[in-house]
Image (cartoon, rainbow, N blue to C red; front, side, top):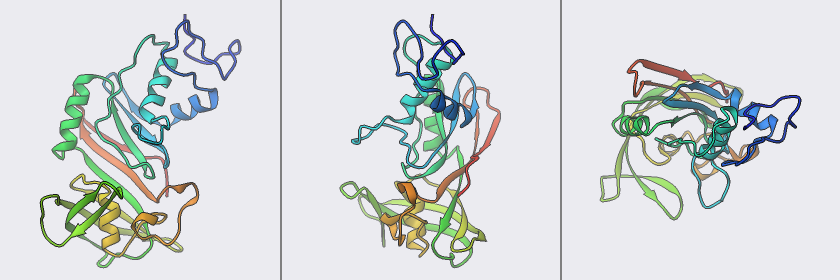
Length: 247
């Protein structure tokens, strides 16, 4: 019988199960993961990602959130065997905020289609190193991705590799040294917000790759996936969620 929760009789850094499919989460990590779940039902899970966490595995070999969350669900629910958790979209590693995961194949298929077709309304908050001029507007740029540099660039005209990138932005308020900008993402291109705001002359705080003068502690950047609104992939009701993190 698996112990899916921590008790006085079970050491807080052990999860007991006859055959463990996933690693055991220590109590501090288990509680942290639980505190950052913004929404969960049988079909999907919305998680408040920290800057520096990776959504899917890459060449670093660091454990991705998808695997951490599988381990959490297995442990919490005393679930034997494999846990299904699909990834319909990703946030860049240095970005914080809302990340959606699918708990069924049906939800994964529908959420992936919604992201591709613009059915998920996404709003970001960014701390910028300069005041945007004008203070609000629509940015439409042709962007190309350089795989070797893992960076995107604005091009003057369409080309074979260029994709149209569109977003709306508006200045929310100045801080002591930076400007808080709200971004409504209209397309989903590689590093789109980072690249387009930098091209506007407003690189994001901590984003050395796109022109910020200095890094943030921990290597993250001051960009947060602040809110999402979408139709539930199965129940078809409107879901609106906000990140609990501040920049």
